[in-house]
Every structure is written in structure tokens, then in C-alpha cells.
Image (cartoon, rainbow, N blue to C red; front, side, top):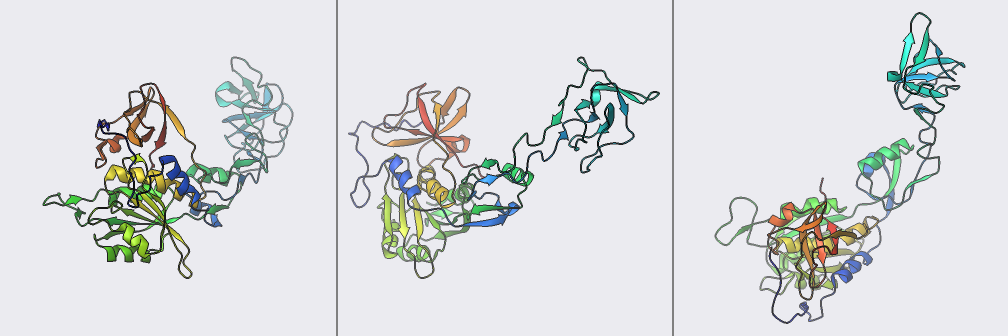
Length: 415
């Protein structure tokens, strides 16, 4: 693993304007506080997947809505043995009452008839075809009242809160909402994002050579942006020149424009010029974090009917770009989409995690029972360690010793 230590005096990097870089925590807070959640709308439940709830989800019915059988077997009324009734109780029907001392075969999930006191599991019962009776053959016979019955309202009662506003609608949430009687869900609109990949040296196919390299961020970023709550409306290559970049930023109608590269002060770094030409306000211009310190966040003014937008400028090196994604894009998109922020996670360092002398350092790690382990190949231009990682460890200046607890960020789970 690259140690990221230096013998030079520690100092924080400064952006083009000479102002000190903001801390990693300040950058995250600035991105989240820069926006408000997008408007809410009621969507058909299936269309709400991936959105955030704009209002708490409450139960519209008891769950279960009536007493049901938890097992295949017999519904029984009172103590046994029981007289067998000539009927079978199936799900989806409203059965007639069960007479005292009687039993009737019942399927899992079927509604219990009035008068039933318990369910006798199929493996515990034995029928006598001669007498037409059912006997309990379990080790502790008796079919105590309430046995293997899912009681009405056991999971929730009508009006009970099930999930808070801000919760992301997952497949499990769709199932819960349906069970609780919802056909539509009130959710926030997902923010739109457009990706502009900068760099004349980038290839989209074939082997690198003759000074050109493969574009790694074009394939990597769209699914991760989607996992962070965005609808990716465009993905474009932009030449290393001021005019086309300025025009691409001006033309985009996405809530969030995401660019790669051109955030520093190199000979072909034109992003700052393009932002000035578009009347942007720089909210973050360099962050005291490694890798990724040249990342930036800007507010783009609205024009006519088009509302104000934001631009997240990611560094061009792959791991540095991912650092910018989790630092600026994740909290910005999360707030726009109305998502409840995922609280900080802490994990034990299974090995020493070297840090930067002055800045926060983000390190790809893999989580295991004994804590998080650093992965090799963690340089700013590398993806090999990241490809094996499931979290990024957030290291304070100086790093962390073995056994120390550190903050970890789960990497976006694209699906």
C-alpha cells in the first residue's frame, strides 16, 4: 500500500484563488446544505422504486388484517380430540364458524373461522377414518389456545407508522407498502445528472498507447450516480478546450452536472473559466483530502424558466474522482432526492491505516469480522484496490493505528 507520508513540512493545498482548502467535513456539509429536496409527487408504487418517501408511510390496515393460520394443519375449536368437519379452509375465503369440539383442515395463510382456538400442525395430528376424529400426537399434546395463529394486527395496526419520510423505496418497501394497503406512494423526484467526461487523451475501446489511455470514469460513474439516487440523463465526451466545455455546461438542463478532470490549474484545465463564463458561484474550490483535493462544487444560476443547477467537478484521476463523488456528489444528490442521510459508520482498523500529515485521507478498505483492512494499489490514478473494496475509510491527519475505530463510507451499491 502506498504510505502517503512525506518528510516535507505539512501544509494544506490551496486552490487556484489562493484560499485555504476547506476540510472534508466542511465540504460534505456545504454540499448537503446547498440545496433543498426536490418537489414531491404521488407515484404508482412500482414507479416509486429508488425514490425517497416524501411523507411517513403509515399502515392503512391491520397486518395481518385478520387471524390467519401460520401452518398447514387443522383449525381446532377447544381441546381434543376433535370431530372432523367435511370442508377445507383455503386462503382467499371467508369461512363459516367452527363448532366447539370440531376441526377442519386449513392451509397456511387461510383465514381462521370464528370459534377456532388454535392450529394443530399437520405433522402433529393423526386422523381416525373410522370415528372421523382428529388426535394430537405431539410430545406435549393439547393445542394450547393461540398456537400457530398469526393474530390480527400482530405486525401493525391501522395508522401505525411503518417508515419515516426520507427512507429509500427498496423492493422490500414496495412489498410492505402493498401489504399495508398502498397503491401509490408520495415520493421526492429523483435528481437528474449529466456526466461530462473531459480529456482528449481518452479512448473508449481498444488498448492504450501512443500517449492515450482508456476512459475508466465513463463506465464507472453513471451506475454509481444512479445508486446515489440520480437519474443519469446524459453522458458526453467534451474536448479539452474552453469553448466546448463552456457550451456543454450552459446547455445542460440536469439538476447536477458532473465533470471529470480540468479542476486544477494545468495547461488544459478550463473548468474554472467555463464556470466564470456561465456566471457560476464557487461553493467549494479544493478540499483538504487525499486523493481528490482539487474537487469543486459550484452553483449555476437559473436562466428563464430553467431553475438553478449545481456542478460537481471531479478530479480526472480515477480514485480521486471517486473521492470527489462520495465527498460532494453523494450528499448533494441525497439532499435533492429527499433521502435521510446515512449516519456515520464506525469500524475497527484491523491493521494500521497510514494517513496524510495534514489532510483527511480516503482509503479503499474491505470489511471483515476483525475490522477493516487496507487494500494495496490505492494511488490516486489506481482502481485495482477500489475494485476489491466495499468501503472507504476516512482517516484523520496522521492515520489510524491497529485497533483504532475509524469512520467508514460504504461504496455505492449499483444494481
